[in-house]
Amino acid sequence: MFRRKSSHTNQADDSASRDAKVSELRVALGPLSGRSLKLCTDVCLRRYLEARNWNLDKAKKMLEETLKWRSNYKPEEIRWHEVAHESETGKVFKANFRDRLGRTVLIMRPGKQNTSSPEGNIRQLVYLMENAILNLPVGQEQMSWLIDFNGWSLNTNIPIKTARDIIYILQNHYPERLAIVVLYSPPRFFEAFWKVVKYFIDSKTFEKIKFVYPNNKNSVELMKTFFDTENLPSEFGGKATLNYDHEEFSKLMAQEDVKTAKFWGLTR
Image 1 (spheres, rainbow, N blue to C red):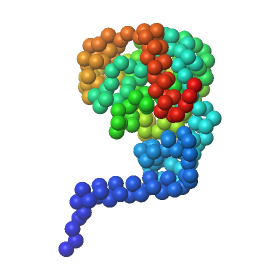
Image 2: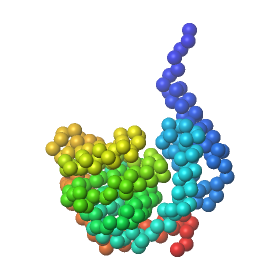
Image 3: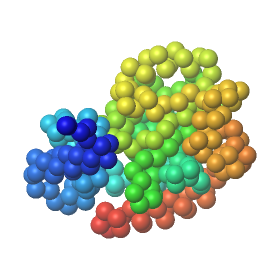
């Protein structure tokens, strides 16, 4: 009589198969050195395979494009003093609390937009993404985004092209880095912007984007699942006070730059 494999056995088979895929991808990439070698850990390779549904050829192409982008853009070399002016109003910054799983949280307040430079906005976000990743606890690969729409208007909105470029960089060069993106209480006129932007978002990322409204019971429960309300700012339905002090944050990020340079073996 034939017996059906246990779920434990199936999981072990899947794990072994995926480990083999990681090894295959490493061989397919060929010899790596310097920053590329440091970036391409087994965990990193696994994220790219996951993003491409474990298709080896697609994951290889995706990762090679990232290595090329990083070689040209050099995100690990961006320093706070280069993007500090973009952060004067606190439109994007790293929160002083983590989510329930200890993940880094980035807070975004598009209503605080203070510049009209597409490249400046992108570099600021890339810089903060790199820093958020560097500050993830051991064993954790993802972060959370909280987007507060208070004060947001069409006048403070970033152009569609900039949004598309940001989405492209996020999806193609930082795959599987997002745990959740909370769009907190967006106004009705955000719908027109969203109708255009959502077509640039792949299905995996789309599933992580949550529209949250303070008067909706399911929304409130969702926030409690991911965040401790004692730490969560009132702008997101929590009990804490959200204070952004640009001078203090600048001091913190100057210290973080030293850590970043050390991690990548840079001397600047």
